[in-house]
Amino acid sequence: MKFSPNVSSSRRKCRKAHFTAPSNERRKMMASPLSSELKNKYGVRAVPIRKDDEVQVVRGNYKGREGKVVQVYRKKWVIHIERITREKVNGATVNVGVDPSKVVITKIKLDKDRKALLERKQRKGAEKGKGKFTEDEVKAMQDVD
Image 1: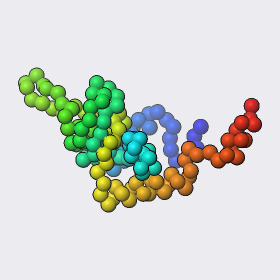
Image 2 (image 1 turned 120 degrees about the vertical axis):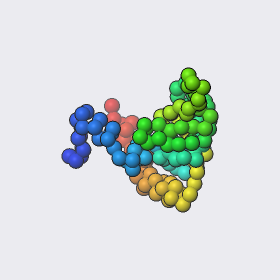
Image 3 (image 1 turned 90 degrees about the vertical axis):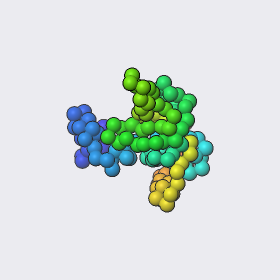
Image 4 (image 1 turned 90 degrees about the horizontal axis):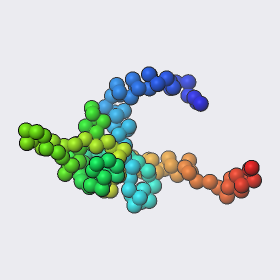
């Protein structure tokens, strides 16, 4: 069900908006989940990926491989990771693009802006009480049926 009249639910319009999105919107869309340790530490589930973050691939041919993010290629919706390369027919080595949703951030590069972002997201999640049910709500749910 559509809640906002300002957002289209048309497949064609959504796809157009996605593939013609400007770089600043792509940054937000190209977010990666944090590892469980970082999730517990910062109270945040995911953040936009950045150049010097250290990540671990969790899906695909390169599953289990770790490395530092060398480049965030927003135009192609991929990230390039340090030791994930392949050799071309002419012998040149090229980075293989990995989708940012298929990696987990294991070590985050913090600067003042990133710290502010984490604090902001943490506050927002805390005030909503995301994913948390009160004891009264749990009891009310058990009475249903």
